[in-house]
Amino acid sequence: RGQHFESYVRTIEQYPDEHFDLVVIDGRARGCCVHAALPKIRRGGHLLFDDTRRRRYRAPLSALGGERIVFTGIGAYARHLGQVTIVRVSE
View 1: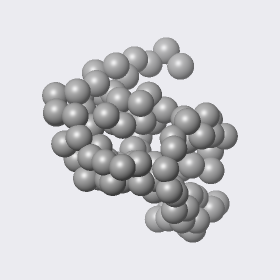
View 2 (view 1 turned 90 degrees about the vertical axis):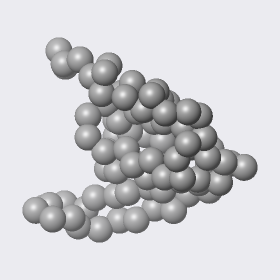
View 3 (view 1 turned 180 degrees about the horizontal axis):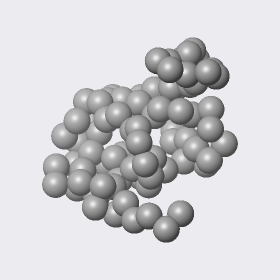
View 4 (view 1 turned 90 degrees about the horizontal axis):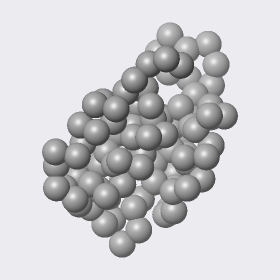
């Protein structure tokens, strides 16, 4: 709230579409980063979305199509279960 992450989210725009095999979404403004990253991932590539157990990430995650793998566990310094979802971008 009250923070602006536009330049952070738009950093990926400097790369051509379908440039990456894998994009990792972690940090601030994850929902916006998902939408910015999708065109930059090669068909058959992957998007790794961190902290997908958090309620605020349900909408951006549900908007993603494709095959998913979900990993649940405890990370470094964590006191609760975390979750990472890897989505394969449709070919």
